[in-house]
Image (cartoon, rainbow, N blue to C red; front, side, top):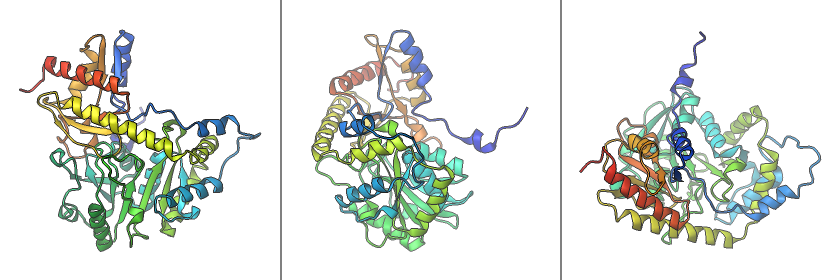
Length: 399
């Protein structure tokens, strides 16, 4: 029998999606499953985007340019300009989702066997992208006790070696919801300049900040023109996850030239989705004001309800729409499966994302889960009630 590749066998399963069969089986038994496991917003996509696709005048669904349409990239540059980030369209490359942008970045900045340092916990697919590119993730653990703030710079510097090519962070963070401070960004900027490394930032949640806080982009940091690479996406910003449109941004012309070769190899990003994404840029500021207010209120409700459950340790997110929770259980994977297979409360249960898959260090996060607060307030309250009842009944509950 032919043998599969080592790379394929090493690809990690998604901690977010691997429980889907259990959820489907629960639904087939007539149990309501409340999804806290995935960052799929329930906010409606901007009507401008939907209408642009409905009203298109294309007669042939052609390839677009490999780097994305000129019109869309020019409008993207204008969008970033409104956020204090001066760019031109040549510094933006449109990708098939932020996922492809991340893969392109890894392919541009590192060779097989090289290393990328990432604060953990981190978006689980970073592990998958790294395995696909033959790279090694070198984790720097952060702690729930301080809401997963940036670890000390000395912790990063101790891990830098001859194979280190980049530092990657998600800001605001998935799965933590942590929003990096200007001082933390400045410290990382100084570090990558000192060691001649790339600083890569996944900034897809830039709009979603709370408590009056502002997002600090690495593209706003002076002196990083040759070092900074940003990944962005329309998925969360406009509640358009299915569009699969993202972008890669850098002021380093060599990065952009190299990324374009990866883009040419896959031909082009999807045409209809670019039409929708370009139209979405016409979304009025009131849309974001309402969305951020809604997510902020949902966050507050979730935290308030979680605080009622004894034995939990809860991180306070200031961005994105995720919350990390430490449970009084030994194995959150087993608890998450048990919720779907063996538990129901008033004919309902919840699906959560076990957090171990968001870590690269073995053993970390085993008693943590990520909750996505992308549901209406009453559903969130119901979900937390179910979680509280489940913890009372779970055989692996720790006193």
